[in-house]
Image (cartoon, rainbow, N blue to C red; front, side, top):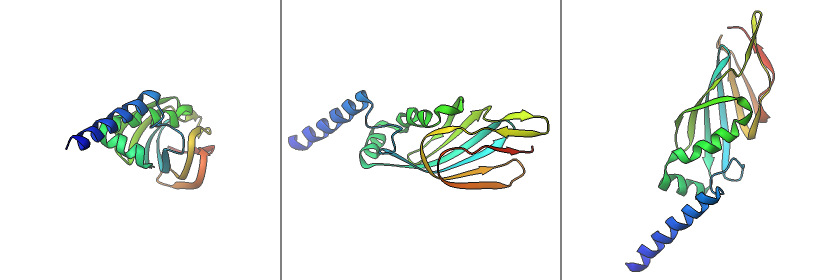
Length: 148
């Protein structure tokens, strides 16, 4: 019984030490694998839904410490997007609101490419008229334009 209590204590201490060094949760692709990102444009803004998977140690860390610990990794992933707000965060998905990701130019909205902090297996862009564009294995959003 004392041995199991010691092992649990050692696990918790080691997880805290990983947290302090910021190595367990990282925007590096070795810890978080970004499977799918869906951007739904709303004027100049966008709502982004994303799914990801974590390696075993990151999963244990999130299970013990909570999903809010993933927020820095998500913010780092969208470092080039400017005004990013994490609306929801779960163990394998998140919803993000990005303000001014596109700009208005006469009768169109122009979306300039934005770098992402890793590779996304599947990026789907949903335009206001309901049409979609899907690209695979990308590290940046493509340049595009759309009507409202």
